[in-house]
Length: 272
Image (cartoon, rainbow, N blue to C red; front, side, top):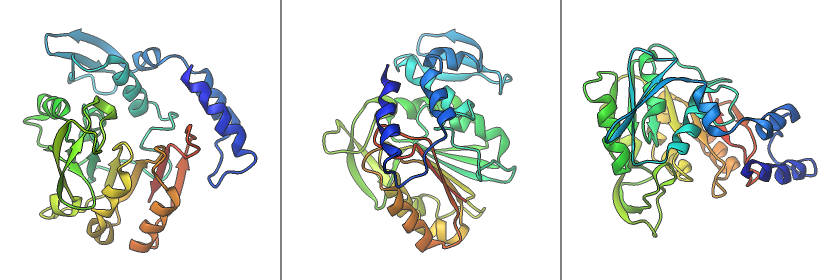
């Protein structure tokens, strides 16, 4: 099983690790957990196959169906369901110093199919769902057109405005020269320049581009000091560099990391 690859970095962390090591019981829980589909089924009431989309009814939000593109990999959605619903999952974006509040304005960078937005929108004032992948942009419109709490921004976010290449690999799509599709990249500071309500939470899972997202949100961070929760498990992420940048912009931030990845990085970095 792929999860066994975690054993080596965990053992190495006993000799040297610049990051806090997760408790042994969490590592054992990760290694012994059921497969992705069984974990996802805990949070679902029903799935309804359709021609273009699979409709899902979640236990947490039973009054409304969620639509997932049928052409996309089901097992990836199962992984995302556990990450979004299971608070013990290292990839879960909330918890610790990060919780949702009724007046929050949330920015979901790397919204993908929209599950985090779907579960978050009823609990906050507004969610900006930022996503460049065409198949997922279509799914966001399927799920949220007409929803006053959600605004869809069909682009990528980075440190500067540009048009860059992006791979087309569903949740693993990433900015890179080998990409097969060209996408627009915008700074969050530009995208949300007209936002008058306080931006209170930035969530980012953008396949190694997380630091660039924060670099393009410097004005937002300086003005509103939003809570920040982002993945840092990709090898190109330097957790210390990200923390130092946030401290330079706003020295009062507190931090915590969660989990351990094959690269030796934590899974998640949270700032509040």
